[in-house]
Length: 262
Image (tube, rainbow, N blue to C red; front, side, top):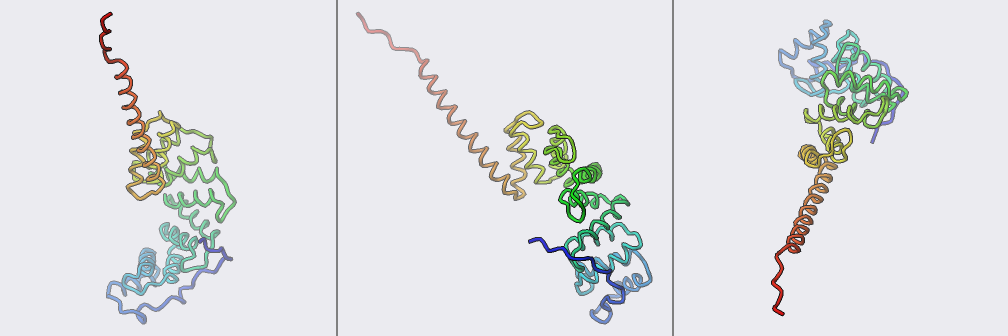
């Protein structure tokens, strides 16, 4: 169930962070990391946030993780900006705030972080944290897709296939589905299978449809398993029907018996 959005909350002040040395027995390396973070080392702040997020070397603490991501994000570290956006989007360690998530994704995207462009595309497509805007969604997807992100490629293919935010173009949809499918994106593999099955944007090819449905099914995609069973059953019935028909035709064309004598 989606969490209810709430009003914005102020950044977590550094002074509110748990004192690592007082709450957990830290290794010398971890203590040095904490000291560097307190001195303002951006990378150390980011690494410390990851440690709190994963519970490696310190007690797991999402609030402290979000706080250190915020400190590093304010200093301009794109990865910290992205992770802080994720935490605002999920309400992890902070109160959920889609508008703040969007704002931090924009900052990370402005520095060229590919994953930020993809997440921005999703938010614009769904109207999450900003007015729904398919044109902006396509623009964000396109930037991430051009950089090779398979999920952006898959979503961009879907936008072309449905004509959302861009002129409908099944050929372009197939091209983007194919790029994402080749990188193992199961949704793109499924969608590429449907394009081959129905001859949409590409020549109809049941074998290719089965091939891509099977790849998606192997990854556990339930709809692909259903389509795979459907197509394989249909092919089997066609094969059986074809063989019976061939036998009937052959029987009709066998040499006839000689006529009896008059």
